[in-house]
Image 1: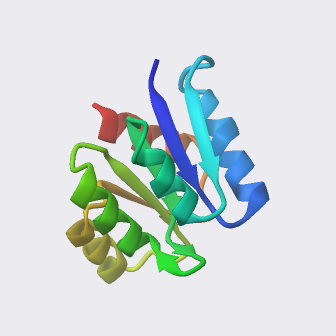
Image 2: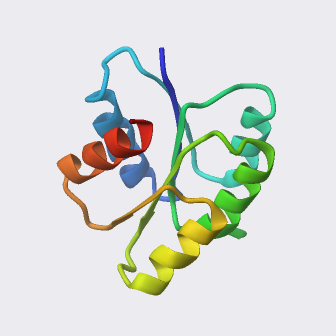
Length: 120
């Protein structure tokens, strides 16, 4: 069963991401966090098939998060969600290891398409 790690500082958005992710597979395992530190702790003991994260979080950007995850687990695809849709953000995210970039507000189908694209 695939595992998705979700990080978003906003509880409502995080719950929406969880709900949308369950549409991929109702039996999917989801770990959701408000802050990156507990997520890194969880990742040091568990495996994830995908990370979906907000670009802006307390004490760390999504770019920093992607770079840090790719340092310890280069195989995990990462989708960054951001309110900034400019090309420089997409480029910088890719440079730090993000596999996809979706702009908020997004439709559920956009997230699901990004998930399918990065998971193959």
